[in-house]
Amino acid sequence: MSRPLIGITAYFEAARWGDWVREAVLSPPSYAKAVSRAGGAPVVLPPLGTHAVDDYVRGLRGVVLAGGVEVGADTYNGEPDERVPEPQAHRDRFELALARAAVRADVPILAIARGMHVLNVAQGGTLIPWLPEVLGDDRHAEPGGGHTIQVSVSSKLGKAVGDKVEVTTPHHQSVRRLGSGLLAVAWADDQIVEGVELQGHRFGVGVQWHPERGDDNRLFDAFVEAAR
Image (cartoon, rainbow, N blue to C red; front, side, top):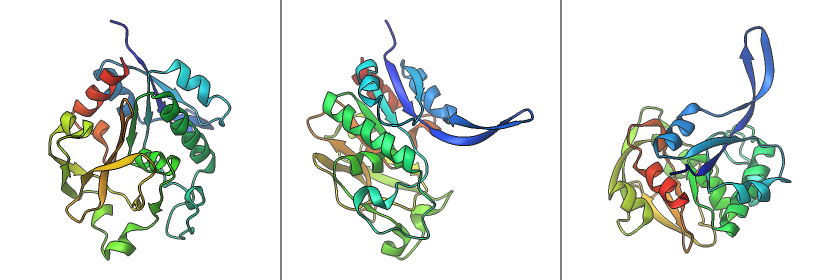
């Protein structure tokens, strides 16, 4: 059986190899490994502008919107917050266009951490730019802080991972207003949205945590199966 081609979004970052320091297209290998374990063929997508997004979507069987730096407030008409790291505007533009094209074409999407925020903004939603200010604590941003996520059992996410998931997911941003067609399907105990799904789409799932980092590959299995 042939492996479906799965695109994974990536960074432009300075990288060192030998005596060279150059701008490079970078993607943590955990994404590609998780796709490969699920039976997909991973390819990395450089954020080179929006001109090729429709071609990508025509050639790919699925898209992973990967994690990374916070989404810029200008993408959802929000107010910039000086505590938020400088956004990568080129990546925001590329990934928002790619997400919209994948939604239009009904191409399966797995949106992870930042990727969930990209999917939400692409659908017209907004974000909480600095979550600790809203909650009054930094619990969601603690690097080693794990917590239990409640998942709707009737959702695609719930069918893949069950009704409860233990996650470690440090983040400073969160979904505020859901985008068009998106439904919240997973929550922390303080009701912060930790998972979303695109209604009527073949597979449009976003999660706040990083399923590619652990040993549980069930979400990637479900995503790649939808891409076949």
